[in-house]
Image (cartoon, rainbow, N blue to C red; front, side, top):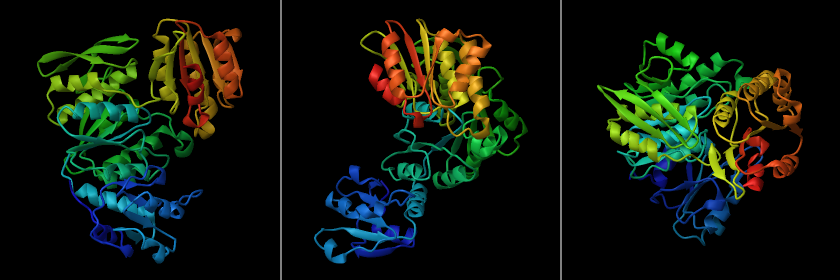
Length: 460
């Protein structure tokens, strides 16, 4: 483990040691006093509606050894009751967090795989980490801790790890540029270019431009891995003359391709040719999009010197982050597909196609996709087209924008009696409880801000 001391932090951040011992080793970092453990470093984040600096004494009471603060005067007399602590003041704690993470990253000469894309970042990150774990001690982004605060905190978790897989999200230009220059990846993965955040960025071409910022921090001789079946990435790859690119796909000729695909409810199987040999791969989660994720992980594993048999084993073992295609049966025998963490047109389409492939009465409970701006009506209507095309038995929508889904499905020919619109989650819950029966399959999907997880809790 590479140690960082209080003295190092003061130097890195051009900060001021207000009180305490500069020799304290800073090992574990936290921004939330609710989860402070003894000897943690508490970084007080100041946001628009919350000021973590006001809780530094609570952190000390929970035996934090170091507090990094801004814009607050500390009472030195009160600090004297605590043993072996340090208080550091900086101009901006978020910037300090990023500077410390940048410094720590430089201490580790290890493979760092950075993952971005419009959809599938978290599940792709999870399956890559599972494959990499066949050879390495891997640190990975927890959940979707993928922004300007979450990514630095992930990097500060480096201890005896010898590989790292990090997820990078964004809402606007410049955000991924910040993240990649902190993480300095040795390999970059772009899963796809879809419509997430199109309301802010204005076009898919601009989304591609924002995602490609990930390459700006990539180390020299790094590798870029892309989904070659995505139209914009395919075009970009053909025009690329700068980067070492490896591709994966099902439709377009790629470095790694899936053949003879068999889709099942609880997983998939396919064949892949590596060199002169053909291998059978089993993916433990259903849906065509998880085949793409596994192909991506295979590319990453091969580029990092992992034997193909171990890669296949890592794919078989991988587990999804909760709320992302989390599939369970309730006590009444109803299958619940909990995909409530987030939603875009691309992920909605993939989930509806998966629902369509299953046996039983197919019920789609769909809510608003947020942050789509002027494109919202059109993209919700496209989801309605997917519902109709995939022969979903019952459609339930909740939310202002989601009504465009039901309107389009009915316009295309879905029977009105099979479509229900609600304003409140409680109405959805009550209706589901009144109609659900054994062997039904229910997909619940919406942007996280719609709080569809509350529906899941009531019907499981």
